[in-house]
Length: 180
Image (cartoon, rainbow, N blue to C red; front, side):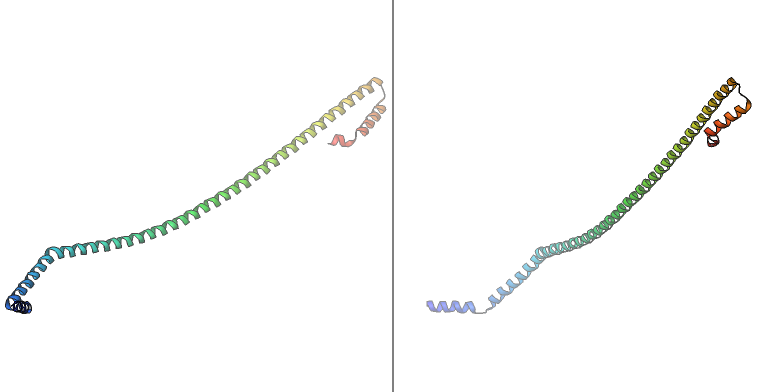
């Protein structure tokens, strides 16, 4: 008996009867509705969330690539500007050197011109000094001639002797003294 019930229970277990098929059909329908319900209320929002997140990540990646490209362009622009600034600085330094050299040349030229003026003034002063000395010598000669004339008058000598004395004095002094 036990065997019969066991075999009957085993045969029932593997037997496909109408109740089993109905239960299986109801289970499939319930699973389908459960899947539809889960799909509508769970899977679709999750899919939408994943889709939105994927779109956001794609947008952020595109934005990051755009920002990286913009940063590279900005960096290239700044590097170009730095090169231009270096060139401008070099041009300014070259211009400053050039102006410095021009100023130096101008200062040297002014110094030479001033030295030439000083030398010219010294020559003029030397010439004036020479003229003074010449005038002084002439005054001395006139004074000597006056003293001589006074002596001649005192000695009461004749005119021939006076002329002879003047001629001798002039020969002593020399003609060049009167001409300079």
